[in-house]
Amino acid sequence: MVKKRERGSVALTIGLALPLIIGMVALGIEITYLLYLQRQMQSAADAAALGAATALQSGHPALGIEARGIAGYLGFVDGGSSGATVVVNNPPVTGTETGNAAAVEVIISQAQPLHLVQIFYTGAFTVVARAVAITGSGSYCALQLGSGGSVNISNGVIANFNQCGLAVDGTGSSALSVVGGSQLNAPTVTIVGTATVNNGGSINPSSALKTGQTAVSDPYASVVLPAYSGCGQGTGKSYGWSSVPWVLSPGVYCSGLTISNGATATLSSGVYFIDRGTFDVGGGANLTGTGVTIVLTSSTGSNYANAEIDNGTTVTLTAPTAGATAGMVFFGDRRASASTVSSTFAGGTTLDLTGAIYLPTETLNWNNGASNTASPCTELIAGAIVLSGANLQISCPTGVAAIGATNSSLVE
Image (cartoon, rainbow, N blue to C red):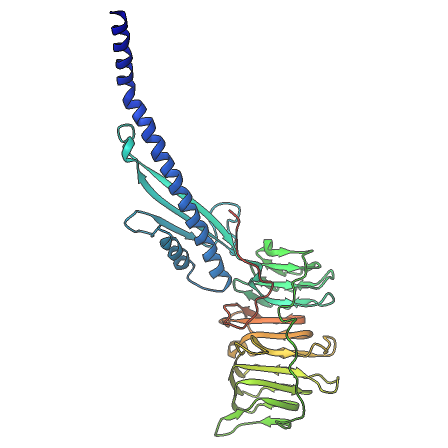
């Protein structure tokens, strides 16, 4: 009789504990599922943030569409039947990258009911995943090459680098000079040496400035100056106003090429060698060309050609997307010196150069006003750079080499 009573008490104890045991097992199963769901969601948030940061680096304007598209492809459709929500912030509004314009924050959340444990909890858990990615260092749109060079911004100039940075390889104490009430607005400013910022000058945000950095390599260092000979297109050629637009052909132009006095001219696709003298566009001229590279050189080792594009002209040139000079709209001979050769581009709103202005050993004077709409893709690469106004971005076509290219990366 005693044993029967003991067996009955054990059965009663098990019966009373059974709902708790079942609930604990159910809770364990569903918590395991929640952990699995959160891991999937985190992977989707990571991929969406990286995709959006890559889009930001390339100048793509629709970061939210990019991020939500990736998240949706991975199973978390914003506002879809599963109840997922995808929030995209640029710059991030939380975390260590708050306010960083070169960073993208993605937050995915989804309410998840727990069906097996409703006897204990009737609500829904909200699963959340968050990721932050920053653009790679390949978002530079201007690069000063060489340890002895510098970048100068003065006299109240406003230089807007739209979602792209400035890299300075100069090693001096004033490798970058921003003075006289000037402003440099850029998400990233890296300098091998140091910067002089005074007399009302400013870099915005101030956190963008990083000194003592490693030099950024020349993205076109392996490109060889194409061979040329003779003066097949003439010597000292000049084109002025004509009732019929001029159509020029590629080839060698000795002692300069001038387009002025209201002339309208088109450069046929190809490579234009300016052998000494000046490539000069002025006097209200209108110049266009697609798939064009202008090489500034010298067959004698002196009087290296330079470029002068004046205000009041309309110049729209696009670099080739393939071939020996792909991505380069201007190509300066590496034997030229920054102390003796300088080129000036001062077209304001009417200067639209798509590709690299590559003058690796020369001085580049750039004045494309900050109040103007930025060209989709303009790279400035020179031995020394003087900015008298700049509005740059780099949403570049195929063929244009990225400056200091690295991949976007997750930071949170």
